[in-house]
Image 1 (cartoon, rainbow, N blue to C red):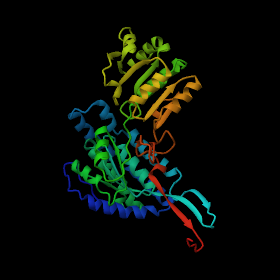
Image 2: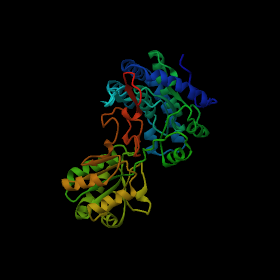
Image 3: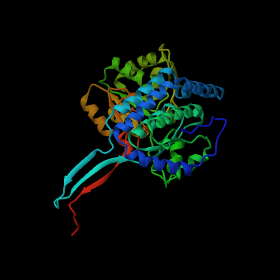
Image 4: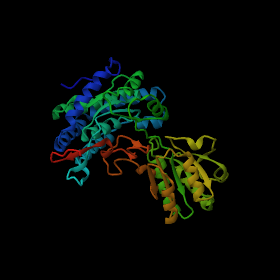
Length: 433
């Protein structure tokens, strides 16, 4: 029988060592499943999510009510919120992952050595993942889906603000696992918000193979400093767009609006707009007027402040402070600065970016190429919104995180990024001379 998750007022004592042992055992079962078996389990989970949608929404509504009572910001509440449409989208995303090619077992390369042995590299699951995340309950489904597809077991630890929602979603997942005949320990949840359990998880290296934090800088720092397990960090985005002097200004307005307004509370939303001085006097008031329609507050520096502080564009404009260009706003706030050249724009981004999502709007291909070559972010955009840095938008299905590291994985972490490889050697009773 699927374990009964406690309600948030019934915090249980968590035995992480037992969870780790169970996850390791489950991972060994998952690693040898066929693609068909894994896909069938995912389809069952999608069906369960639709069948239990009302229960999930009721639990989420309680989380939202508590969040409002505790004074959470509108941006954070938006990240917490599940709606019928969002739950339906989660079920659709699970089915999309089931339809994607399974990387496990795929041969990455192969060759025959001079001695006649055949050598190849084959993709395999990482094993057991520990994922620590904060306010977005949809992450629970995303991570579980990708982990199961790649044959990994996972131990989840979500934020206290969405405890009810996450427990409801894990009950859905485990109901699906039970119906599919798979071990319930394939997806486990730390059903106690005690922060000491995070530190304990970070040292569970006997059973956990990788830690993936999704949250703010403090969480990432904690994981890097205290984990005895390899850590993949990312998800903190100070994202930029540079409007070149050659850009199509009318169409650039649409891209800027989308990048800032479409969902301001996420990591790939726009934080800083850089505008070439040759078009700033004309273009910045148009940007302000467009964004004012959505209530965006502008933090303008130097020449941008001089241009925007007067006029009838309707936007709220404040003079930028010394730290405003090092902020991931996660809100309807946008830093604005005028630069003299492409080189100055690149220099600003290199100094302030978290190497998540940065882009250029231009009709000059030479400038676009130079920008792409110089900016070493996980995703670099030419004439496109930063909001596209997403596993679903990149055709990867869901994502576990957006990595800004340079080792193992960068950008949206989809299926392949949750695998490693092993060498397979086929011989004919070869012995080493």
